[in-house]
Length: 187
Image (tube, rainbow, N blue to C red; front, side):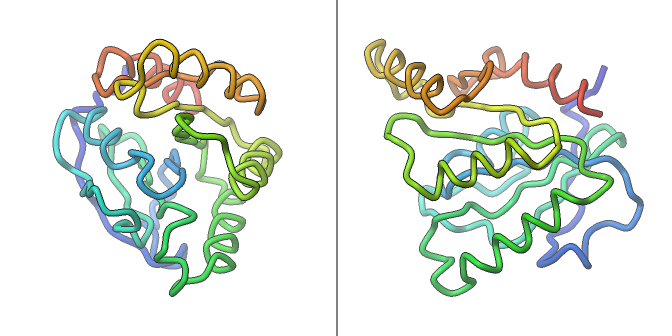
């Protein structure tokens, strides 16, 4: 069993050329800006290892965290933020296209905030990830901010978009225990 509490920051890589060279397996955390990637990583590890901010677009590079000396948890920049006015959506798409082809990438955790309908870019990215050939795990974030009616609507949206067997995150470790097991199966 993986000890997610045994976690440490390794590096921030502006591109795949600067990623760690040891070919340790990796699991990529990805989602729209401000969806809660860093918060999820902090909850999983039980420490404030990833910088989280209320302001979207703070993560600008691929951030590598070593988990239990067994794999890298990689925090990707969020897509759809105002930061991409400067970096460009095309560069982000190229980065992701290259990254999903990496042999060391063993799984992708896609975070979705289903308090709102997904936009065209969200749906296109979701479909791209479904067809990239890597195990895709879904986490519906910010469920702790939803009432029963909103949560039911989020579950319907998940079904509408073909989001299979998602994990609903209520911002606590208990709701994320299934994610740990699924990550371990990817490795």
